Amino acid sequence: MGRRFALKTALAIVGLSICVAVVPFPNVTDDDLLVAIFGGFFLGAGIGLAIRGGAVIDGTEILAIYLSRKFSTTIGDIIILINVVIFSFAAYLLSIEIALYSMIAYISASKTLDFIIEGIEEYMGITIISSQSDRIKEMIVQKLGRGVTIYKGQGGYSENGKSRDIDIVYTVITRLELNKLNTEIELIEPNAFIIMNSIKDIKGGMIKKRPLKD
Image (tube, one colour):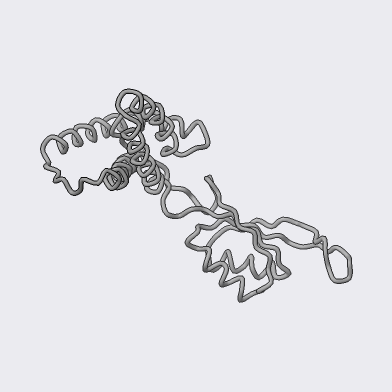
């Protein structure tokens, strides 16, 4: 967070203020629930695009960005936690109904914000146990272009009752590549044992997460 960040933030805030003051916004619906849901969606999209471009549009996002780098949580979750305090005051000073609609709006905004910042490419950690580990490893590297880690393991069950040494393949792919990986493994060994886990965040390796701009 340096001078460029401060300059972009100032421009974003000024631009938002001008748009709110000058651009007319028609009343699309009087349904409070629709206003909360879609208002939250567009709010989250606006905040997310601003942060993606290296700016923020209010002080809450600055605190959220700072805390997200210190703790293992998303910017959207931190914004929600901050606004829980605001909602509590809203419930006390205004009404519980208004506070509840505000919570719906910010939950919608939080999910949209995380989607824009984190991106559609959610990461998956894949563990594969197979007798064709060499072929599967080669397929992952050549066809998916991903790195592979091999763990030396020992099978606890076999037909003759004896354990055997096995190579356990581990790789990290995006959820969009999961279907292709399953299809390729099915062609190599249909009975391969596959364990899939969602990964919150990664750093380094062959998959590099696009950082936020300063």
